[in-house]
Length: 138
Image (cartoon, rainbow, N blue to C red; front, side, top):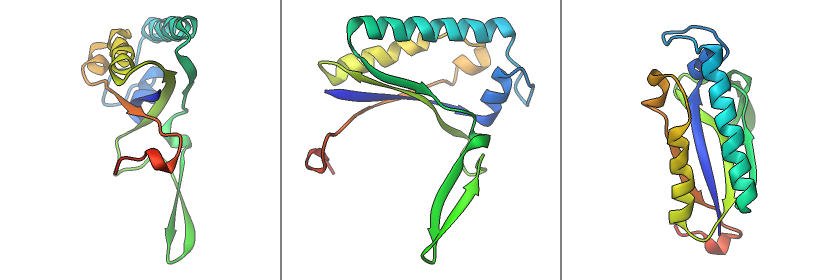
């Protein structure tokens, strides 16, 4: 079965990683390098085990456009969005034998190096991927 592991960040988190202080301190270059090295090793291990299907990081929320509809007309809003602090920052699609295994893989992200003010609030979601509408459990 395939599972999607989703990670989240705010615009402030992206700014901090780029070395820009906000109401949180800016990341030191060595902190950003350590996170990058961890992610590369994490991805390489998943690829070597045959469980990695795909992974991608996403650009900062400021580069986002949200499309909606108002009175039948498409409406575009540029990000970031005041109503949502955290947005999807990246994802992994893994194919493994169980939800428990996917959860175990996602749990390894807790070891990703980051400044304490980031690590203490980081989280990821794990969701099964359905291949058709018939698999939806609503």
